[in-house]
Length: 132
Image 1 (cartoon, rainbow, N blue to C red):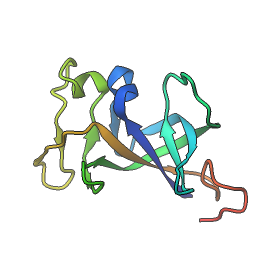
Image 2: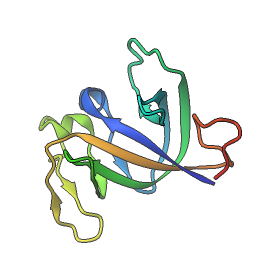
Image 3: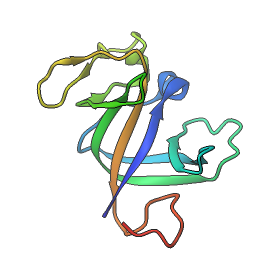
Image 4: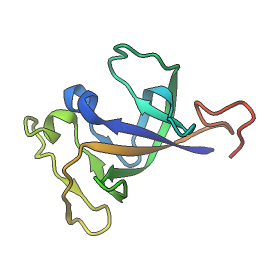
């Protein structure tokens, strides 16, 4: 088993992104993006508009969720509301909650890290020589 971190958020999640919860089984379509520093990151895409990056599917169970703060740090959250709710238009009130205390987490950003546990010994987007 390998834990894979997928970046979720921004306009794509706000447009039509679903809610994510710990323990949920997901099948995400991701762009395999190389940062200017040379790191490889997986970024969920729902529209694939103008995609110039290879695509990869990440299938598995959500084991962790974090909101990314403006200073680059992150804080664990119980669930990620769907995009409409985050923008104040959904049935859900769109709040973020600490998974252990139940306290409301305040964030001015709608960017998240979803950690998915996948079967196998190679993370999606990783070179074939990668081993966990």
